[in-house]
Length: 67
Image 1: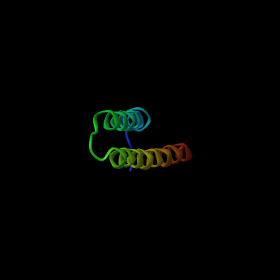
Image 2: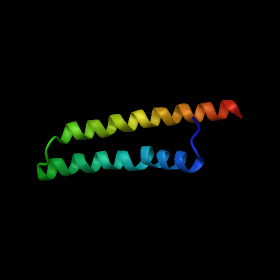
Image 3: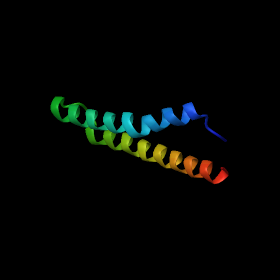
């Protein structure tokens, strides 16, 4: 399955910008305001980000192999 350039760029932005920022934001707010499951939610976001980044890396490697 091939990703369109727009889909790839969007997912790359999510993995590189959105998810790390969201993890830091929730971690900080959980500590400051006593929000529930601070470390659990943060670790889940980071795990999803790592998974997505790995898939995008594989996709990028496969793309350049085909060229």
